[in-house]
Image 1 (cartoon, helix red, strand yellow):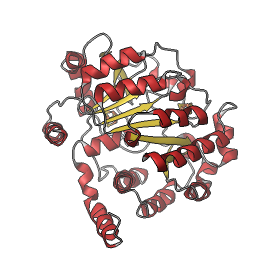
Image 2: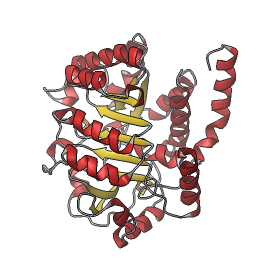
Image 3: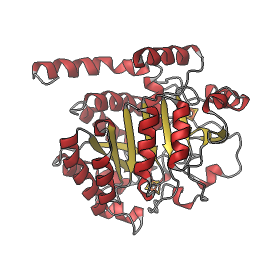
Length: 373
Ligand code: SF4
Ligand code: SF4
């Protein structure tokens, strides 16, 4: 059944139709205890947050989903995060429940994972900005490298028993952060934890005060990669070329395919190619639904125009509304951003990810030879 739904969504996205959402990015709170230089989440005005009952009602109306990503702000600032996650599990039973965290609540995160009813669905991503000195200088007093490392260690240990995975997201925010990349990877490799590398973006409507202020129909982002100003002189091309090679050694097949796709599309953008080679059709407001803490629905990460609120209007009605249609027109005119959290659903729900099929087949063959696939 899921396979048929997936194929139907894929066909609709490729032909310009409107499938129901399959992938939901839900920002459970915009509050954050970190004070990162490259993100204004902690400065944004406080908004109402859906209660676990609201969440159950909304996700029951959405029905089955394949991927739900819980993000923020810092999700573990919510005391009721377990209740929120259980509500989603009961109502939508996603194949993957993905949680991004700054890792500042090691005990709460471990308790969350230990008590979640279907741990195999869980994936954790703990964000770091570099080795302790750079990380701590960026994140503020309440969020430290030591806490995040403790969180990763606890999750890696528990995950081995319960069958879920934790990985580290290294956001390269400066030249110093870039220089930390290899040592950071080695440090977590010792725990059996993969480190994925991303480059800090200049700004996005979701996480930037400047981009949020008073823009109802913002300009489209450029088709390149608007690097954070602190990376202006950093040799990011060499870093990403190295990441493409390193990804081939990754043991996790899905991570390998997704990361390969993303990095291969990133390189031409960093080099300033006017027509980058990987350009999947965007599935924002099609297969991909974003929900803000209070239930409101923006067009995408780079266009904060709200098309409505799922606590007030049923998701089905909202999806068919004139506001959603207007949002889709903006999406269709977009030259395409390269933010990973948008690119991966775009690549999957248009099947553009199959361009990395040779990588996947090579991995399957070598793993089969080794008897572990
Ligand atoms: S980047 Fe993450 S941890 Fe840092 S302020 Fe933004 S939401 Fe918080
Ligand atoms: S590609 Fe999609 S997610 Fe990215 S800015 Fe354009 S419309 Fe938004």
